[in-house]
Length: 112
Image (cartoon, rainbow, N blue to C red; front, side, top):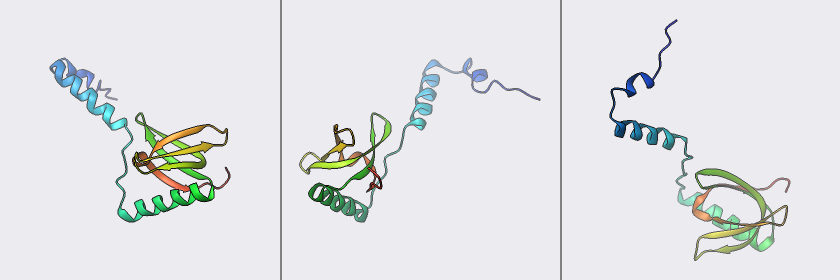
């Protein structure tokens, strides 16, 4: 069976700048991609956030922060349309501020 060394075999013939660019490209592949939302989904989420703040029902929010995807379950306490943020209080009574533009998924929480 032929065992190839992959890119290690070819790095000796490559310039260091090329090796660095390849490493950057591979690292970018590991980053989560932001969803682009259509207008209908955006308006549904805005309505859901406003109702959740007003009626105090729990939401499950998936969002991107620091190149990672996080999931937060809790009750939204404050919606700031000027800054585009929402504050959510989780089950441990800890508050988290989330940028609305970083939200990837937003649904009603089943069992908070």
